[in-house]
Amino acid sequence: MSRITISPYSSSSSSSSSSHSQQPKPTNNLLNQNIIMEEDLLQDETLYFERNRIKQLKDERRDIQKKTFTKWCNTYLSRARMEVQDLFADLGDGIMLLKFLEIISGESLGKPNRGRMRVQKIENINKSLEFLKQKKIQLENIGAEDIADGNEHLILGLIWTIILRFTIENIEIEAKESGERKHAKEALLLWCQRKTAGYPNVRIDNFSSSWRSGLAFCALIHSHHPELINFDGLNTQDPLCRFFGGGGFIIEKKEND
Picture 1: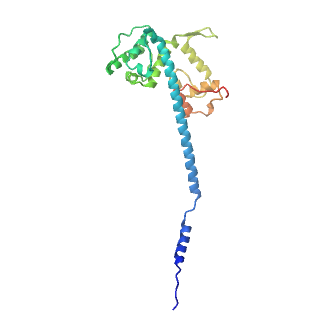
Picture 2 (picture 1 turned 135 degrees about the vertical axis):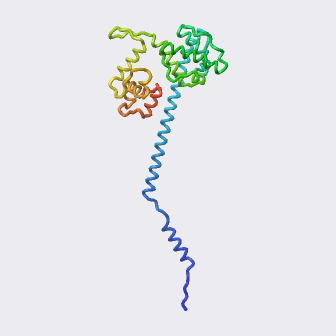
Picture 3 (picture 1 turned 60 degrees about the vertical axis):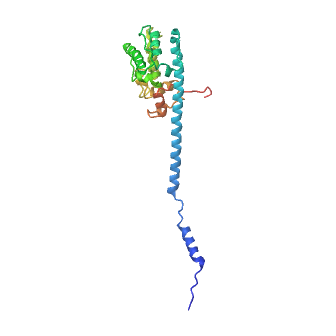
């Protein structure tokens, strides 16, 4: 009778060999997926940087405007021995806003409420806004509640509107070419139109809607410093356009550039 000897290693050896042969090997598809993931991550990081840089510039612009407008308001309020400490909070009861408008316009707006209760604050602010409307001043999407609640963007817009109406618009400038006298606002608008003439998709007719796409700001900067902006490569979805369309006025240029 013949014997069959089974080696204790034969099964494990074949199993081991089989397991080695079944291990997955890297494929081109897997490598391509890794590359795509790395590219997506890089794009995400770039987008994150762009968004944070735009936010940083907007914050800087807001702080500069707040500081400038506060000083400008206090040059008038000092006549009544009043002072704005925080522009976004101190106008909230409407008392300072009423007094400020009285001083800058030279007209009486009546005695304000104490401004302790919210309804009194809203009434004071509404009286200020109604006065501005009587002066044919357009107030887009600005309500008494926005001022009372400290809406930063709308408060800055309100003060800028008042500056345009009661300060810049009352300045007259004599044109060198014709000797014709123009209000400073009209002269500034004409200057912007001349500087941006010929730029595609740029038409400046006012100081509001004409600037919303951001292209007008970019064209104005490009007309003075073309090395700062590639205007031909811009579109309204470009982060730079979106920034300027949001009202950003700041671009830094180093002396060594």
